[in-house]
Amino acid sequence: MAADRGMTENHAARSIALLLLVAAATLLVTHRSYAFPQGTPNLDDITGDYHFLSPDDKLGILEEEGKLKGYIEVAQGAEESDDVLSYEIVAGLHKSDHVEFKTNIIHRKYYRFSGKVERGSGRQPDDPDYVHLVGDVEAVTVKGDSGQETVVKKHLVLKCLGKAESKDE
Image (cartoon, rainbow, N blue to C red):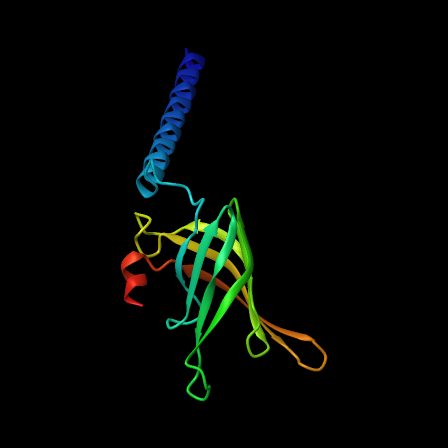
């Protein structure tokens, strides 16, 4: 009789543990479907405008069949002759969740980016922060005489601007 009671208590404990596990899994699935609702388009096209190094800088990307075109507008300091330098993206690709690009050289400087595409907190594709480009931005300076490159690398999250914010700029 004591053995039967021990087996019953053990069976009850296992049943409760299983029930808690199922409840936790249900909450996780419910939470994920709330955060990323069914029907949310995947991030096959990352065309859009993004914040870049500073609030005054902008990255514009146009994706066509996995190849990237676009520009980076970088605001210059007060001591510079140009207000904004516009670097053209000369090579770039987006495949699955990987993205990388390289710009042309202006005043012996260019930019490279390598990272991945992630969903941001925006709910709709036109919302600010709908897409993140997470990775390393390298500002590369080329020495004129030797061609030697000096690289300054920063790990950043580049957030998309959203339709309304893009028009304001």
